[in-house]
Image (cartoon, rainbow, N blue to C red; front, side):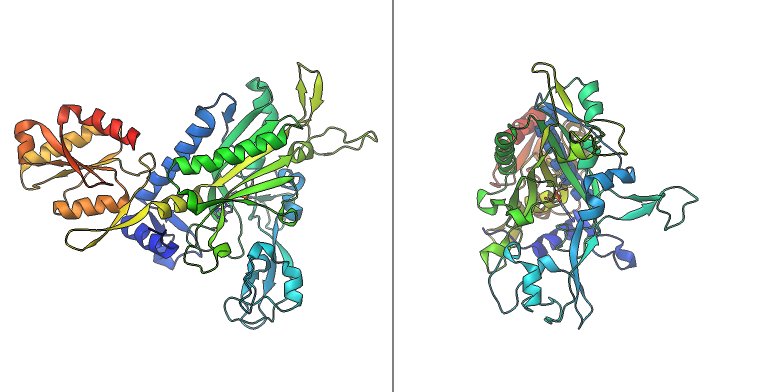
Length: 480
Ligand code: GAP
């Protein structure tokens, strides 16, 4: 079955408690979203899987959780103050504020947004306002995406000494801690540092549900290598990240690698390959169906050099007069000193959650010709692993037994108890939220100390002894 469009997922997400529009009782807040009880479980599972894969299962990785608000100088020397901006245009007819590089070409020309030189296209009046169709647009001007704030109780709003930013990427918190981690953990190159956390960007045109928001979460890792090894290691991480998404159930048909052309590369990047997901299957042109799920960049030695106090060259010009540290690395074995190159796999938690939801969405027709939604999430991502359901909710012995079974499962796997409907409805509800197994307690269970276990994907049922249930479910979850 083809992937559903985002609207189908928005509706399911709200109906079943995955994601709600934020501040809804006050009319919402642009494109802010709140994760509900199922959404927070799903998003936590995505983060846990990523952390386990990239940190726990490797020998060359450390983790970190750095501050969201950093010294302003971090953003000065990283280049964000000067260059972290989007080209902004206004529509002179309807006053819409638009991102020039995301406008599509008028007159139906089938060009990907990536391949358009928007400055030329604007001059030739080829770009149109998506809201009113006008080509009467202003010249593009840079709009810095960092959210500004001020530090300290006495700070005036325009006091430059109090100015600070909410971080627009988690990466810089890693670079400024490179030396702390490398020396305290006695790490040798190559090794990596991973971080999961919130980032903030004052996006010009947020939208498409949780795809582009102003507050979002990132899962980033900076892998430090010897210059010269960077290209090989970069390719290894590209392949590994692509396989990670497939291993958690994303269909290969809905994933592709996208090589960023030179003119699209960030100021620090030598090469960047994005993993694209087919987020917009309803769009007619194939090229516009895809957008970025994660990026894997070769950031060279840009960041460590930029934050270092070390002299840059023989003239002794200091790279960074404000930094107190040199972030170069001394290789004891070869007696060489160098700035490590950095390979950076950077993924969005929210976009990953969206892709996993879209890819898991299926519909199935019952014997009675009713359409059921079955969310075939990978079991490790499913918010609930097992739902324990009593066949008769007015029979205290059955209810008591079902609740006791739920309690016995919950130390090892996320289980819920539900008696708020007939068994058909309860199964349908669990299918729709992706619960791999339903456990039904019936009259017979009181006699034979066994329950019925129903599989979400096959709808097949089998009878399992209560004493073996936990082990049985754990084994089945691992097998799926
Ligand atoms: N440190 C590199 C960096 O931040 P990026 O491509 O700008 O790279 C990495 O961001 C990932 O973060 C993206 O691939 C995307 O999944 C996610 N992301 C970026 N901006 C986002 C936004 N406004 N809303 C949701 N996710 C976003």
